[in-house]
Image (cartoon, rainbow, N blue to C red; front, top):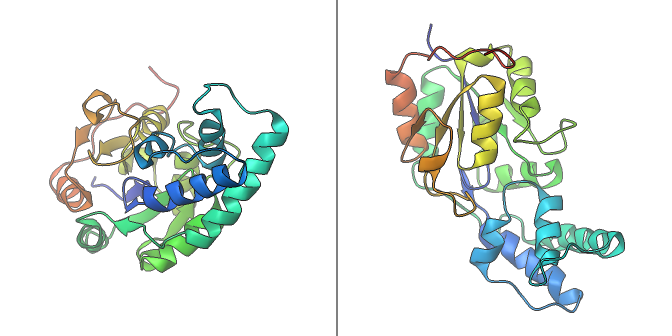
Length: 233
């Protein structure tokens, strides 16, 4: 039995969104009377959703979380600024378009599974010409829990009507790898994304691929691996 679906992360896997996220984060900080952060600092905060990004950005440099009022003000400002710049500087990584075409040519069902809120995901996919490749989009606010919880991946499999053991997760971070592991889904990691300074060589994945095009080749040549269902030894 061959693979039937690919569940692909967005930020750091398909798209380099850090330039826009950094602009929105620093616009938020400026309005709150805080100095801007370096782009590479913001990159370390990406991948767990907007709430996490804002919380971390407002905890720097004092390493102390903001109070509830400051966090809510910051989140509202971040959302306002990010909506204005979403997709402006973001760029597809090499191999994305070719890889997606090759995955579609394998008759695979494709889904984006991201921790990014829906209000930003759909405009970004449209702006970068990716929407038509995907059968499903699962966003950070689609399910009650985000990655690294397996819920979004299992939700995607359910809606795509595929068994988790016939799917592959393609991501760039521990969130993707741990969610896939918990869901009993084979996972691949790309080395160029936002892994918080932790090399992908240290992630619990089945293999490391150069990009989405390489992932498509991997899926074409590899049989599905025997993965225990989630919750079993």
